[in-house]
Length: 403
Image 1: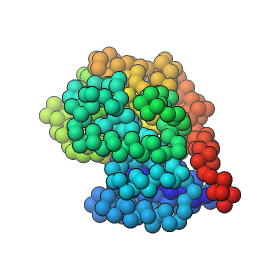
Image 2: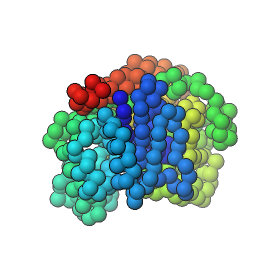
Image 3: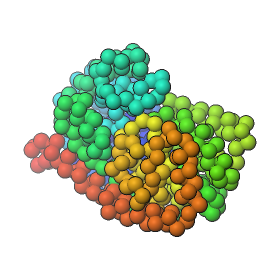
Image 4: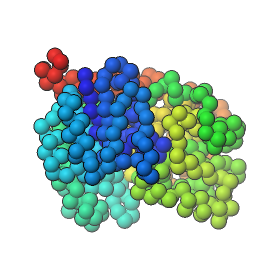
């Protein structure tokens, strides 16, 4: 089989959820003898070469050359197009894609929300509506609203639409009015484990060597939907209860790439510089060690969790999670078994729950064992590969299957 993956970028070190998942899948497919090509809409920043994936051909032409590069890739006659990108592609590309066997892989809520996160601006509150809604323009702005016309066409032309949580499938099904398949992200439980391979970057080596310090891991990049706007408030509350606590924030919000500098400066002004560690670039090899260097993971979601890849990784590493009862998280973990649910808007209660776990190694150990077991039993990436392969076979025509 020949597989063409169309995605936005390959910024795995930013902890971009689609990039992390699809790069893992691509390498695994290549190991199984499938010819895999990835074409990214956006080129790497700073003119850097694209990330190398063993056995996978990667092309990052940039928006101005994307149409020509896609034409070259289609000349290889791929059996399946795995499209995990919201565009914009332009009308010619959308028309070309309409005629092809496409699995449309939705990360987030971009087919039903111009802003992609189901959060109502400017107050950044969860939104229970979906596009087309009369307030979408005032919330997301007219440029994003106009982009929805192309997205509607992209969804209409896809043979299969796929989500990564039951919550997102329900929301997409209601907003799109068509069936939506469910494929769990899954995690490599042999790599993400409580005793991972040692890291090789100096900063993560430093914290990995000091695992006895009370340390809290912020799950995912610090976007507004993930609670990045509340990080400082949480840091203040955590440090007031556990003075030597360290909050670790990995990854980068592409819409606010200077977030780490602003928050670090604010923490310094408050005398909390030693309690915050921002790591905007996290090599994928070091990610399991980063989880293992922490005692508790937090997901102070202000929006709705669409997929939950970072929660699954944390569970596999045996990290108890304190999270907002939001979206997919309510399916991934159980209250009082793998972690605790506390609304992130209740800062004091959220901090109390985190610090209670930091102070109670016995409870932490019980949660950790349950978390690891749940990841192994329910979120092994091998199961996700099997389910995705079934979708590929369904979208391929009889002639393509015979080939």
